[in-house]
Amino acid sequence: MTDAPAPTAGTLMKRAALAAIAAALTLAAVKLVAWMWTGSVAMLAAFADSALDLAASTLNALAIRYALTPADREHRFGHGRAEAIAGLGQATLVGGSAVFLVWQSAQRLLEPQPLAHEGIGIAVAAFSIVVTLALTLYQSRVIARTGSLAVSADHLHYVTDLASNGAVLLALLLAGSFGFLWADGAFGLLIALMIAFSAFSILRRSFDQLLDRELPDSERAAIKAAAVAVPGVLDIHDLRTRQSGTHVFIQLHAVFDGALSLEDAHALADQVEAAVEAVMPNAEVLVHSDPSTVLEQRRPLAFVIP
Image (cartoon, rainbow, N blue to C red; front, side, top):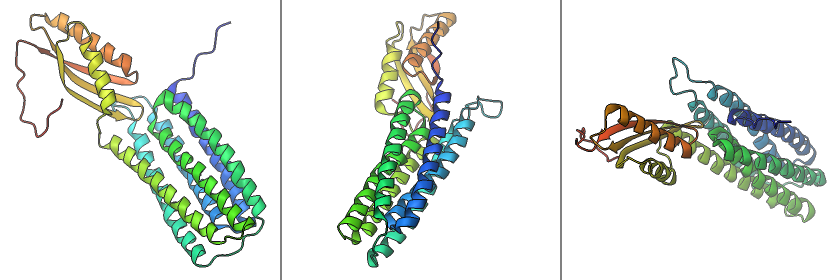
């Protein structure tokens, strides 16, 4: 009996997106009921966060589906940038919820109010922590397999949710069980700040992809090492990298012996591409062959590409 084939990166990304929608929908419904029972502004903050999570995760799922569409005549480099665009949308939604919660929490700090049915709120906060922890662990596995920006953005704000749910739990304990009414507004404000930080992190990563930021130095070093390790490669230069969704595009110049025939140089360039793709599985690699006997004529550049 043969084992079932491992799910593809696209399948894993879609499953992670659907899992996030299911978790956000469940938590938003539970927190809405809990807020209506307790009147806690910290619980209201948690509900608003989950409601925004639901909207963001739905947007994420649509973006992932589009990003996984194969390259076509109008989009030769594929549709991976849809993940970064979805990240911008997520950051906007999450940032907007942070502004709303700052206003609500400030009002509660100025006018503290006693809570009702805090036991329900505590149970809901604990339930939320369990559900969110399970989701983030699953997302971590998917990110390790796919490197998806959209799933990473979702994962980042659900990790923030873990902290915010912990803050809600502590706020309800302090305000409801110990009479520290200021804790409700204070922790609501803390949650808002955590949400704002999450929005900024998502925004920065999305802009990095949209503006073709180079891959991290460690990955560039791995690409260089793989290329120069190919027998017959004398050196490489002008390495350029960028990422679009889960796909990476790499261009480099490889220096070969000038006495090689065109056919042999082409075959050697193919070996370099294969070596780089071995360390960067989701990459499309383009190698330009430079003969060692000819100095490359370069245009003056305002920067140097190492």
